[in-house]
Image 1 (cartoon, rainbow, N blue to C red):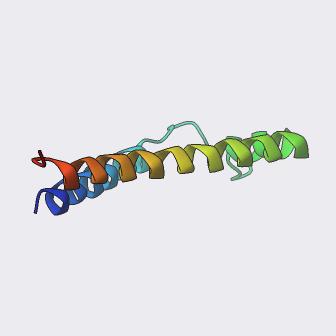
Image 2 (image 1 turned 30 degrees about the horizontal axis):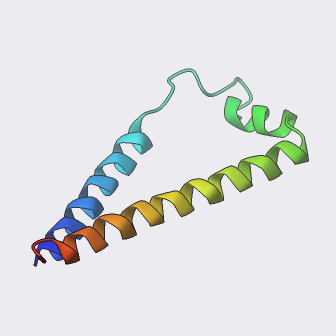
Amino acid sequence: RLAAHLGMAFATYSTLVWTGLGIFHFPNDVLKEGKSRVTELARSLSSTTFQHARKLRGGAIGVAHLLFLTAMSGAFVAGNE
């Protein structure tokens, strides 16, 4: 039961953070042509930069999964003596 509650708490918190970051926007992000400044910045970067960013993102997702797995395994062994 503890692991279920802890897992639900992590899922709820992660969803709240994801939604909060999703609604955080920059009011002056759109240029006159209707294109985003982020899109223009992305087009100006090299392909090796995107490869490094993809590796970093993959590593960050992996660390997040390991963190969740560690917390869940701690919940399963809580109270064992």
